Image (cartoon, rainbow, N blue to C red; front, side, top):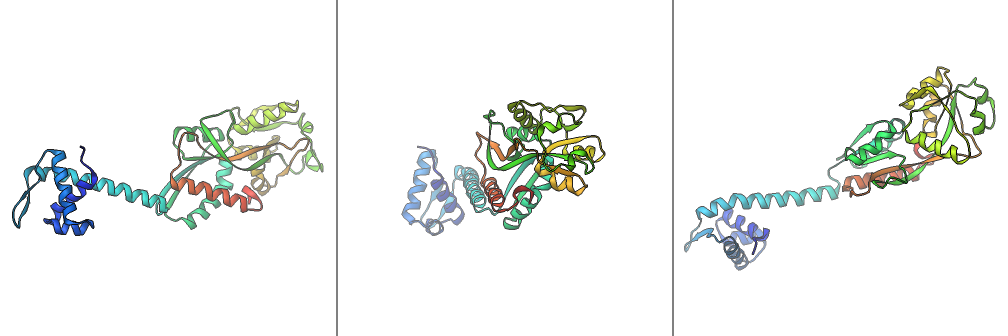
Length: 305
């Protein structure tokens, strides 16, 4: 038979105390039970571990060599159990989340702060990256979670939906469209449009919805960029108007721009916490995911609160 950790524990206790009686007290077992475990271990190893005399118990040479291995085996198990206990008690842990730059700037900081106040021993690291990189980081394991849009066609990741993020038009206040009380998507047909480069999930979502209603919004070839902040800067400079999502509203309004949500129809994307579909989250990551869900559900203004 194979040696067991219970036998190793008994062996270490006897070796360290020098007596079966004291070892039994340490382990909470009877002296006979400890003696039986040592006998089983010697049989399983095919080695004599102790030289036994009337009042003297000494490790044999084989026992001395085996003790180092037994101590390491018992110590490794104890550390494993302690680590598991700490993780499940949330006395420590780590969460890594990747997010598009707007969500990283305007949404996650307040959520991370709230989480840290409640669970100060769990470290949350954030990566602010272009939207298309979020999924790549989750798939590669560089991030435990992602915040963004997940394609229903992508079986490698799964999303926990938080809410919807509607598309709107961002423009300078003196732009003719800004004077309208209502806006249709058709009204943008002749406008110079600024937007994200191809491959961006937000752009893909918008183009799919436009195609569904029989429309096509053509972004100006030289006005396609990677970052939302750059888009805002280009609109503020008067280079054109932009189609973005409602997350951008606080930033757009802070630099004096106007946002209008076109109707017929209202178009939105789903914002989700994203994880690999084949990966079980660690306790700290599950806790963070649940915390974010509750925070969004209880915030009257959702992610933009």
